[in-house]
Image 1: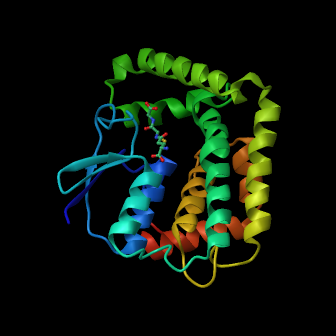
Image 2 (image 1 turned 60 degrees about the horizontal axis):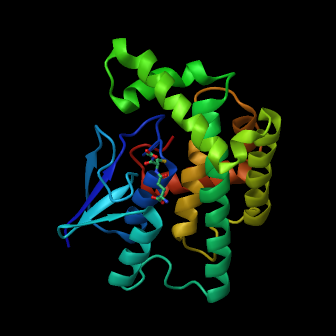
Length: 239
Ligand SMILES: N[C@@H](CCC(=O)N[C@@H](CS)C(=O)NCC(=O)O)C(=O)O
């Protein structure tokens, strides 16, 4: 099988500043699948217009969750195969908590928080690959678009302190559920561990202060879990 992963370039000492890209790449490493990486310079050319996406034997496929499900099916369930139906249900519920709710608080943290917006600008410029003289203009347009999306989602209609509390509650639920366990289930990491590490890593490795990062750093078991996944899957980047 030939597999090419199209994703953003690494940032913040993380494999990826997109939790979805980091989740998928972590899964590929847990599964021991060979892949090439192409770093995106323009908007993703996937059917959804989002990253990550992959080309598998000439076929394009988008969405980290659908890609993982496809790879699990076609390779004999190398990562999640031992999970019971009840564990799969728990994994799906937490995946949705992170991807459909916590994600939007993280988007707010990175793109829209009026207190720290200027600090994100140089990273955004690097990520979007725009020339310096265009950066302020592109930053304004991109931020306006993100703020519109957050309002359309609904979360962006709340006051900042409410948005932070919503994200902090998600992280707290994850921390309480994981407790002191090394992995989400049993004695081996699964795709849920990839997802947790991708979201927690993207929150704790944010290089500026904000209430979500500060609260997450207090959950030392979650931070240790992220570092465990990094040491196992990305030793070249692990602290
Ligand atoms: N459900 C998708 C979500 C992917 C996603 O939202 N990717 C973001 C980066 S974190 C993206 O490509 N955004 C570009 C855009 O919305 O234009 C997945 O699991 O892959």
